[in-house]
Each structure stands twice: as structure tokens, then as C-alpha cells.
Amino acid sequence: MSVCRYNIIEVIILSINQILSRRGMTQYKLAKASGIPHTTINDICSGKTRIGKCSAETLYKLSKPLGVSMEELIDGLKGGEDMEYRSTFDVFKSNVCHQVKDMGDLDFIIQTLESDRIRKYFDKNWYPESLYLLAMVDYLSRENSLPLCREYDDIRIKKLAEPLFPLSVVMADAATKNSRWKTDSVHNAIPEFMRFNIVESEVRNVI
Image 1 (cartoon, one colour):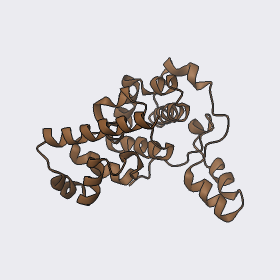
Image 2 (spheres, helix red, strand yellow):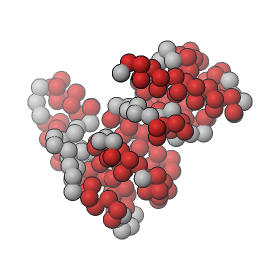
Image 3 (cartoon, helix red, strand yellow):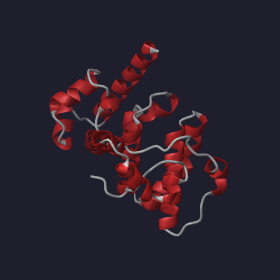
């Protein structure tokens, strides 16, 4: 297992260095363009820091000057579909919300459906990611008065066994030692997400 994970990191490192080379961009230029410290970028490019452990903000700032999406960056750019690397669910959610903000509702829906990511994640048993994407597509479709894509009706009947709360809510409940935060988050959850037992109340307010 450790060997496989190391090989994946090598592919990610190679991909980042390749795109820097293709764009004629040095690590220093990337640091200036992204606002990320050069030492951090050097650690990522050398493999000292795993990109999957970076914050969503760091990934977002790096993806812009590199001209790739946050998901492509964390999945090793063009090799992402062939790898089993999996980021944390909270990072995944943040990536999706940033994509919606950057692309706009309609382009996000089109790109998600054309890439068939919902089905690909589901077939890999990545159920939270698959259901989150489907919930997002359904939510944005409702917001824009669009019909649902019926291709995923077989997945729509699924749901997670237990409610999946945002990490911030889990931490708040643990810190206060009561379930008020979870109760409030369920009450305010977006229906399309709650259908799958995913507690999500805010997808627009991303930085």
C-alpha cells in the first residue's frame, strides 16, 4: 500500500513540474502569481508536502495561474482518472463549490454530466463524492428551473447509512458537548443534499 501511494505522489509531482515547464513558469513565478510562499511550492513540487494535505485555499490559488481546475490539480492533472488517490471529503466539497463559483451554474452542470464523474465515483464506491456531485447538479438544476438528468435515477434512490456532517459542525458539537450544531445544520440543510444524508447548507459562500 505504501509503495502505491508513493508512486501516486511521484506522478503528481511530475505532472506539476511538467505543466510549469510547458507554461515556461518557474516555481518562483508561480509563487508570485499565486501568492503562495515559494518554500511551500518547492515542498509540494519536491514531494516533501503532499498536495492532498494542502488547504482548499492553497489549491485554489495554485490552480489559477496553472490553468487547471482544483480537482485536476489534486488528482495529478491529466492522470487523475487512472489513479486511486482520494482527498478528504471536506477538501472535495470545497473544490466542487469553487468550481461552481468559477464556472457558473450551467457550465458546471454541463461539465459534470459530460465527464460522467457522478457515475465514475459511484462505480469506485466513492459514495459521498458521487452523491454530493449529484446533489449539487440537482440543486443547481432546481435553482435554474432545469429538468433533472434522468440518467442517474438509479443512484438517486441511494443514501448514506449515516448523516455526513461538515467537519466544522462535528468539531463545534464536540467542543460544546451537545448536539445543537448538528440539529441546526440538519434543519438548514439543502433538500437535494439531505436526500442523500449529506448535511450541506451553504454552497455559494466560498472564498
